[in-house]
Amino acid sequence: MENLQFKTNINCGGCVASVKPHLDGAEGICEWNVDTANQEKILTVKADGITKEDVVKIVEKAGFKIASVEA
Image 1 (spheres, rainbow, N blue to C red):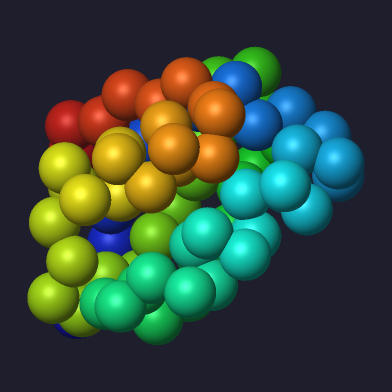
Image 2 (cartoon, one colour; image 1 turned 180 degrees about the vertical axis):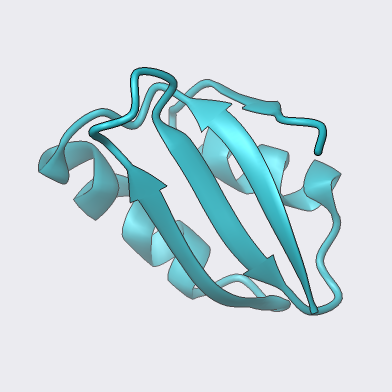
């Protein structure tokens, strides 16, 4: 399992609620959270078999901007 991190524009509880069904339903995501207090709105995903590219597609499909953060 690996932790993937992304900068997003998911900036409030309503945004988190909008993206929740997309991330919860994705195969290969074990756990996720968004640090809305962080200026860069960091999304952390505990991934087991899902790629960064797949996470980006899921979040973009939900209507949000997302960019991978390199460790």
